[in-house]
Image 1 (tube, rainbow, N blue to C red):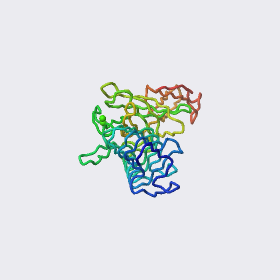
Image 2 (image 1 turned 60 degrees about the vertical axis):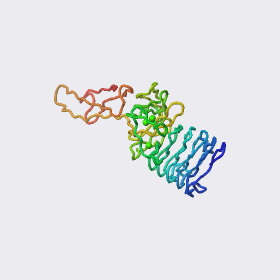
Image 3 (image 1 turned 30 degrees about the vertical axis):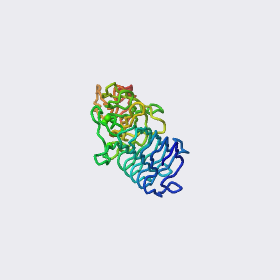
Image 4 (image 1 turned 90 degrees about the vertical axis):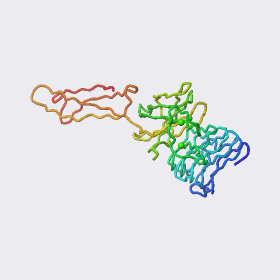
Amino acid sequence: MQGDYTQVVNNFIGTNASGAAAIANLKSGIALNFCFRCSIGDGTVSGRNLISGNIEHGITIGPIISGLEIKGNYLGLQADGQTALGNTLDGIYSDTNLDYPIKVTNNFVAFNGRNGITITTNIGVRQVTNNSIHSNGALGIDLAPKDFAGNPIFGVTPNDPGDGDSGPNGLMNFPVLTKVVAYTVGANTFVRVQGSLDTNNAGANTIQLFLSPACDASGHGEGQTFLGEFTVTIPAGGGVVNFNQLLNVPGGITLNAGDAVTATATPPTGGGTSEFSACIPLLAPTLAINDLSVNEGNSGTTNATFTVTLTGAIGAVDPVTVNYATANGTATGASDYVPTNGTLTF
Ligand SMILES: [Ca+2]
Ligand SMILES: [Ca+2]
Ligand SMILES: [Ca+2]
């Protein structure tokens, strides 16, 4: 694809007319080469492209000579948006060495044979936000610097202290999640997320949080469901900043204890996004009360002590309050024991 102001919308590329089976292009579905002000998809359902089943990548980004937007497409899925029809290699393979920004937003990138999105070159910012990325063969987002022979080095790129390293997207450090807890309050669902970001990108970095049914085999994310975002302000000169954020989760998202939570970090003013963080399991507070038996005896009273244990909660930041009351079983209130009730706060 070349030319000026080219907009690609509402196509099936690499599939049959129903979008349910591959009629593969022998290379990538779309290859961009010196495109000026081009866009693929426009973020609407009617403008969505289905780019699946191709022999190489869904989209190969070669040299571009202005900003590029890839928005709202299916890459590696059938037209139903759920069933696998992966491109053989990556959903998106970005290999342009020209300093123009790329925005990849609101796409569904799944079931591709290798990475969801690969970013290889050291120049330009490649912003990857608000996508659903899951079930790809390797990583969700892979910042893949090239070796001396010009071949990308794939795999999780570890964080470096201070983030002074350079490479694709500056090898932006991913957030480190330490605890994510789900809370339901009435009809609202929240997550409390704790962790840290270590980078030299001063200012408001955006952390996006994602949920997946299971962690990727790499131990790091993909991210199937976007849960929300917040910013972490890094001081001038860089540093490690801890975060402790309560997010209101949009309706319609089911949170299950044990789901894999991951995050990405995007530097201020639309900088280049990190790889996904390591996964941590979503916690949900649970209460347990010990079993107890006491000998009634024939006179006097015997105290019965019940221990209520709370696990999976944050603690003082989000106190948990629970009502308790005794109820009859084999013992009867008033004649066998003194009924009681009250409130416990942890
Ligand atoms: Ca990498
Ligand atoms: Ca880094
Ligand atoms: Ca860096």
